[in-house]
Length: 249
Image: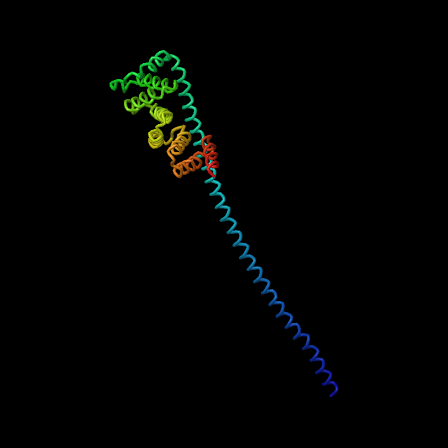
């Protein structure tokens, strides 16, 4: 009897540790599963972040490409503007040089007025050059009446001449000096419409605003000054436009 009781107790002691070991294994499995799930979630999150970073890098590369293109276009435009300004300056230098050879003719033109232009010579570059030189001499001398007449004749006769934009600019200036502000404004506006790439476009826009001021076109003048600043922000004319707008406040 005592022997059987001892065997039962021994069996009980053996069973308890086995059951405790079973519970410990289950808990460990749960923890491992939770850990694996957490690792998988972190991997998914990492993969998603990596994908987002790669997409962002791709977008940055595209933007950098666009920026490089814009910089290239800006450099081309700046170079083109410099070339246009150089051509304009070269023209004036050349014109002044050639005018020295026509001083006597210019003085005579001032006295008797510009000689009539023969339409049959309209296709002769040499004739058109002499005509614009004569007109410019009148303009430079301050004889605005004869200069405006000569410039109008030149524009009407040599409509295909490369000098037409400058002729219109000078005509507008002579008309302004004659206090014919409406006609001057119309000439300036016609110049910008026919030759929007004119090298002195910013100055012409400012001249338009000045004419509008003389004509009491307050709102239109303000609009023109703002247009000038927007189109040619780095020009001297834009600086004058900003000063003019500041004076109006």
